[in-house]
Amino acid sequence: MKYMMKLKAEEKEMLDGSKGDTLRKAMETVVRFGETFGAKRLVPIDHNLHMVTSMGIPLLGTVFGLMDELIAGGISLARPFTVDPRPFDYSTVNVGPLKKIAFRIMYGRQAAYEKQLDKIGLKDKNAFTCACYLDEVGNIPKKGDALAWSESSAVVYANSVLGARSNRNSGVIELLCGVVGRVPEFGFLTDAGRGADWLVEVKTTKKPEAQVLGSAIGMKVIEDVPYITGLDKHLGARLTQDAKDYLKDMGAALASNGAVGLYHVDRLTPEARERKKALLKKKFRTYVVDDAEMERVYRSYPVMWKRPDARPKLCFIGCPHLSLAQVRAWLAAIEDTLAKHGRRSAAVRTVLTTAPDVADAFRRESGVPQRLASAGVTLSSICPLMYMNNPFCAKEPVATNSNKLRTYTTARYFKDDDILEIIAKGRTI
Amino acid sequence: MSKIFKGRPIIPGEWTGPCVVSRQGMNTLASFQKGALAGKKSIVCSDQNNPDLYDKVLTGMAVCLPKTIGSTTGGMVLQTVAARGVGPAALLFSERIDSLAAGGVILAKVWNNADVVTVDGLGEEFLRFVEDGMLVTIKPDGTVTAG
Image (cartoon, rainbow over all chains, first blue to last red; front, top):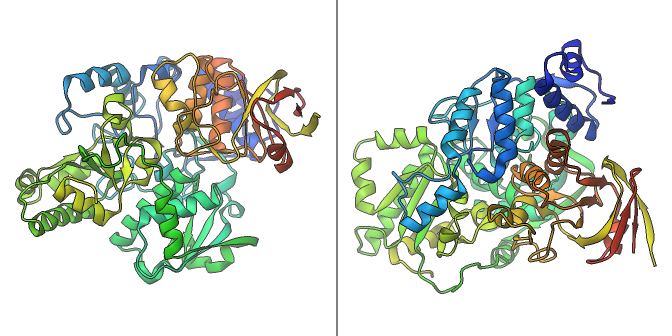
């Protein structure tokens, strides 16, 4: 193939097929991809990969074939990697026979695919989470690290909160970058690509719901970079665990309701602390988010339930996966709300989703298994989105506080306080 | 009356056929997932948040759009539908192509020998001009004639 990029000798060898046809195709893909965006060179990957493709959907035969080709060529990744959550886990979220049949058909290659992941260097059996950057999981890049990550919520977190550098790579592209050990240098990997196109002024009277704020900004700026002011008033000026959890949830909505891969929060995120409003490009646009705008966005969400007044059958909290602090806070809030309503256990089947390592840590805390059982709350590490792709699950009225889950499925979005009332009362407000 | 637009060929090719138009970013996963999971031979858009495309056939069409948005599975989804012969025949971007769509069409080309003719940078005027059902003719040099 013709290329303009400046390649090193080893990279040229991969591209000309000297190191085998599989590496040739991997390198050709990475080079074509980089050239599309004007990359002048490839740079070494500094940190472990995170991959989006965790599901053994037989229809993704293209991916499984590619994995087989890598394995047959003796190719594995240099560093252990993490991957998105599993689609189902009957030990935590059991389902009836019809749903099981559908899951068996939909994700019929799950076990085989997990073996493939293992062969090319999966971190361990607990590596399945969309929030790989949580302390308990430990796939945490440093500021400035060049990455080849996918999973939109993880990419936006790594770029914005950790200050690492990854483009929004598609599934498989991230894997092939890992295979060749390099990533094309363009976009968020460059200083110029990290400037802000929008000034977003948050002027709400109270702390805005993270998932609605992310949705509002995402729908406005689409894939541009916003510089957000006014949030430090609500979050403080330090990246505390609370602030990081808020930014995690806001980022997931930014990335799914739009295509944002990087945001800066005035006084809070690493680059905003260093460069402040100098991050704004010369011709930036302005978007003001006030109480009225938050309400307008919230009211704009279509309700995909067959009967909008249906009683919810299931409630998902944790898309993206909850941190340990969030799991603790949600269980406590559910217990408090149940007590307020004179109930012992949830009126709606409620699932808190978190990383397997976080779930293990939480279950080890004193009294937690008993408290979960008593409140009727399940702790799971599945991907709610993939669960909802089951057509039998999609038909049921499912409530969630995740804007990402709302965007991709028939689940209905509710604000955190409303979700708690639904869990206690068993009906929508 | 037809109009000629010039863009940058990402996956060059020659193709003539009807188009569907999304004035907003197309969420690839949300658009294709229902039809792809059901193994449909003709996929209709399942993205409830995209009134321009929702419920319209995407298979074999030229999709005119500003860019794609949403989950990073997007490129892999594009690769899969292209490899299975149920993807769009062409993607015509008014803006510069995004990383997910680029990844998808390049993966399909290199690993599956499946070309989704792709042109980007056609300009805002292109997206204002094209309408659902309009015939578009694409040339390998990135010239697109619409109408």
